[in-house]
Each structure stands twice: as structure tokens, then as C-alpha cells.
Amino acid sequence: TGTAAPSSSNKQLVTAKASSSTSAPKEKNEGKPAPASSAKKKKKKKLSFQDSLVKKMFMTCRPYTVKLLADELKASTSAIEFCFLSLVDKGWVIKKEFSSKSRTKELYWANQECQNKELLDILDLVPAQQISKSKQ
Image (cartoon, rainbow, N blue to C red):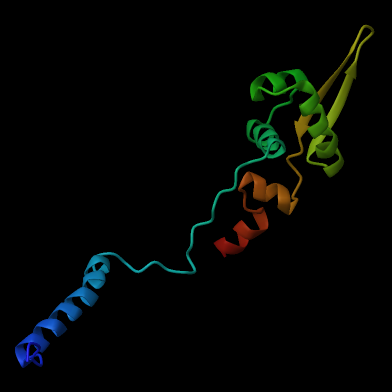
């Protein structure tokens, strides 16, 4: 007949090809350590406008007027004022009004004493208590 049963040498060739194809992926990973599933990198989420405003104020540690922040962040003064409403309510920003005979001026400071967990996450900071625990 035209088709003969595969001989033992053909069987060995087929098994050699199968074993070489299964060992190929192992060779790729031999020099590299296996990725740890528990040590996955955190995806950095894109900062919202409010988060970038808070980060700017906390990292510079200086008072700002609405107009100055609007110029630095390239945003409108109404957007800055709208964010300040919620930030002052949360206690993350302190507002101080200075008045003279002719005009009043409002300055905004970042509240450096605020230990809110959400704020610390935005700023990528670790609470001081956690630092002291890790030193011990």
C-alpha cells in the first residue's frame, strides 16, 4: 500500500520536534527571573485637575492668589475658584483674606497639617506614623 506505518526512526523524529517546540519557551525565560504576582507595579492614574492643583500647592509650600495659580496651571480663574470651594471645605487648603481701605486680597495656603488618607494618596506620601513604625 501507499501509506506505511511510521518506523521507529520517524517516531523519534516526531517526538524530538515536539520536545524541542515545548522547550523553546523555557529557554527564553531561563536568564530572567520569573515575575512575582504579588509585586505587580501599581498603575499610576492620571491626576485630575483638582489633584494637580493640590499637588502644586503642597509641593511648593507657599501662598497663592487665584490669578497666580491660574497663570501657572494655565487654567481659568473660575476653575481655580471652583476647586478651592471644595478644598477649603475638606480642610486641605486654608483661605486668608487681607483687606485694606481700597481692596481685599485673598491668599490660599496648603494645609500642611492635614493627614487625610485621600490627600496622602494624591501626594504619594507615607504618613509619619508608618515611617516611625518601619524604623523600629
